[in-house]
Image 1 (tube, helix red, strand yellow):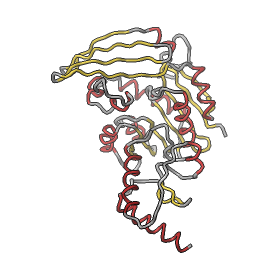
Image 2 (cartoon, helix red, strand yellow; image 1 turned 90 degrees about the horizontal axis):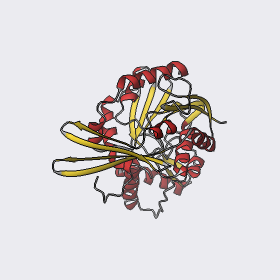
Image 3 (tube, one colour; image 1 turned 60 degrees about the vertical axis):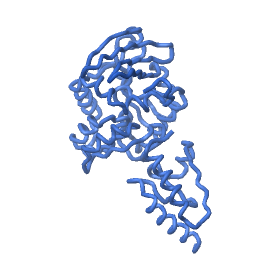
Image 4 (cartoon, chains in turn purple, blue; image 1 turned 90 degrees about the vertical axis):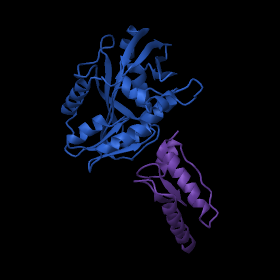
Amino acid sequence: MGDARYRRIKSNLTEALQHTPVAARMEEVMDLESILGYNVSSVPAIIVEDKILFEYGDIPSAEQLESMLRAAFSEEAHS
Amino acid sequence: MDSENTAAWYEDWFDSPYYSILYQNRDETEARQFIDALLANLQPPPSARVLDLACGKGRFSKYLAEKGFDVTGLDLSFNSIQYARQFESDSLAFYTHDMRLPYRMRYYNYIFSFFTSFGYFDTDRDHIRTLKSIRAGLRAGGIFVLDFFNARYVRKGLPMQEEKELEGIRFQISKTEDGRFVTKSIQFEDAGRAYRFEERVRLYEQSDLERLFHAAGLEITDVYGDYTLQSFDLQSSPRIILVARAIV
């Protein structure tokens, strides 16, 4: 299931995580009820620690995702 | 597609250049008249958000956008969406998307599935999942329209065989049914290579569709039987066009 956008976001996220100095586990959620439970406005979306990192628009590049992840993990560390 | 290829038929066929060749003489006028009749019936407000699900190369998404609606076209075919993007504007956007997953949540006033873009999956589960995803995309009071064939009417014309020559390619086409699916087999040769594609669609009858819609939380409000929106007749209508609202 899924399409080119899903494959691209997964590939970009995998690459971004490899360059992010945090041990993170990626989980792909395709169950419809679970997706609806995340309360995102659109899918594909990226959730990090229950916070929405990406939910609508052009799929971010691996570099953009790396920056977004670094910011999210930094925020998490300081909270 | 080679016979060894195991991808679902709709993943290969709609991305194939031969699909466009075979269907190049579709009756666009009738299709546009249908959309006009539907819009006259539904009376969407100006700037209504409209989703054209399984939009192909975007012809009817473009037509809807020209009428002033804010339109999104979604299709699984990467090549079709790449083509459709030439039509994008402030009120028209295209994305590849698998209809079994929701796209934007609680966003659209209208979601349209035109010209038998439903019934492609093997299981009821995937079809219910598609309808649930559609329901998730509708705003409160939003409307979903499904344009599907009348299975009872289609069965009368089976089995069927025909040949068509288009752009120097001789297409041999046959249609058969096995009780659950109607299968259209398309065989031809091009540049010394043999090809075989299939279209395989579930023979859902009105009662089946009602069951699926109910399971997905969609309430059917109107049923039409052709592109001029005449009442549906199980024996004689060529189409079944269902208008449904999300059950709150």
